[in-house]
Length: 406
Length: 227
Ligand SMILES: Nc1ncnc2c1ncn2[C@@H]1O[C@H](COP(=O)(O)OP(=O)(O)O)[C@@H](O)[C@H]1O
Ligand SMILES: [Mg+2]
Image 1 (cartoon, protein in one colour):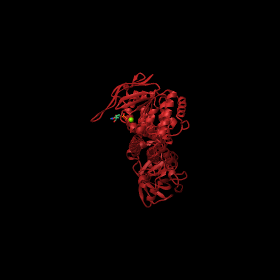
Image 2 (cartoon, helix red, strand yellow):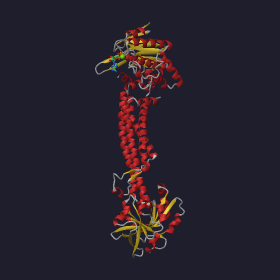
Image 3 (cartoon, rainbow over the protein chains, first blue to last red):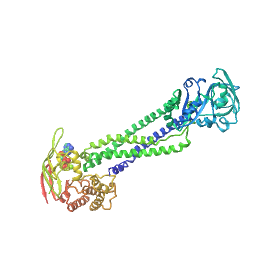
């Protein structure tokens, strides 16, 4: 009955209730939309970086991770044998990583050539998907001495598909080696720094020139089911390979990992500011509502409504208002987000290469988590309850005789 | 049976300069079923007396005994509960809850008392048709005239069958015809349900309808007549 009365009371002054409802709804909408957007942006960027660049976990010789020394290799068989017993590992790609110069008739650029087994590599990274149909493919079987370079590199070298380019590097024996390749694919990722520095060749093509022992590799790129598995499995791998360097994407790109954590903080700050404003709005509204109803509340006290009931009535009113606003706000946010969940929000119109330089993707797929919605709604309602305490206490201080006389 | 008894009841208001004895040494006994008007000029202490008897205001000294309980000894919390269970109130300006219908206004106190729904519904319909508003159950206060609203207020006060009903100038906002109708209706209910009414007025026509008239002057009872 108190709840019924409270419910009816919030519709007394529709304008005022509407303002509070609207404020809650818009605030919640903005808060959840923004946080879904930022979350999506970060996660999307992280995922893109994992897909093209980092993979989930990389294993290398400790000396290699420090200075990419060609002599700091490990034997594939040693690593593969131990990994065979780790069931949550999905895919592994071993790479030779050779630093050198890539030259065309026109120009030369510093380049890291990744010697990969295409079939393995395609299960770990998505570079092969980043090659448009018109620009070739990722080391197809029928090609010999093929190389995949980025669009950026192709521009710098002024080369096209099927152009000949030359890669020179220092072998493990300390001699200079040069090998001619034909461009078989041109890729483009959203990370231009990555694009500028990486090229892909076939392991079998480049290996004979390296003067490395049979079966050697510089890095194992590992892909697991998801970020959670990655988090879980990293320490296991570290104990499994005490002599090698085992790093997951967070360790490989600490800036991303940190941004991801800061994202939560930003969301908290934004929501905090909104809740603060909301609290004042509610205090103000409820004080006005009580002032307007002084006589009525006095009458209720006179005919026998005790303090706890009056307090609860005011509380219910506030909770209903905020709850209703929350539902409206979330409905709004979901309605606004649903169309962009699959198609994404294209940011290319407002940001250019500068963001891509840092590896942020320009198409954002917002990420809604039910958990986040529930958290925000609970926070809003808690704020409502806390903000209503002061006005409700004011209502309790009313002296019924004076209230009725007024 | 004695419903209310006051013993040497005094209420003093101490202002900055003067001391007002709003109610002065009032000894009053109200019997079950009485229909009593308290009359007197403005400022004679009617409201102050009714507020004290209704448990809304504390006397400066004296006792108010209702049902063997001295209500002046109750704390605020006990008083609210006491009012809810024992006293019906009718106010000068109706004071209905505007967002509730006539029926909901009448049910309200019974619901606060925690009575069962079926009983509440039956009683609400009965009492509203007793006050002649059986066809206005779902009307909201703003859809009713002043007289009708005050009849809902009387129904609300009566619905839970309190020990007595306190009404401070219940007809002050009504025209003479409506006043008479309301009084007749109150009298009828007083007879039908044997509920005690204690009301104040300075309207002579209302006084004429009363069964007992207590005259106050400067806070003192100067006459007390039963008809
Ligand atoms: N809260 C108060 N403070 C000071 N004086 C008051 C207060 N309430 C009533 N009085 C005084 O008490 C006297 C009786 O008032 P009241 O009981 O309202 O009389 P009535 O209802 O018969 O007009 C008046 O002189 C009035 O001024
Ligand atoms: Mg008065």
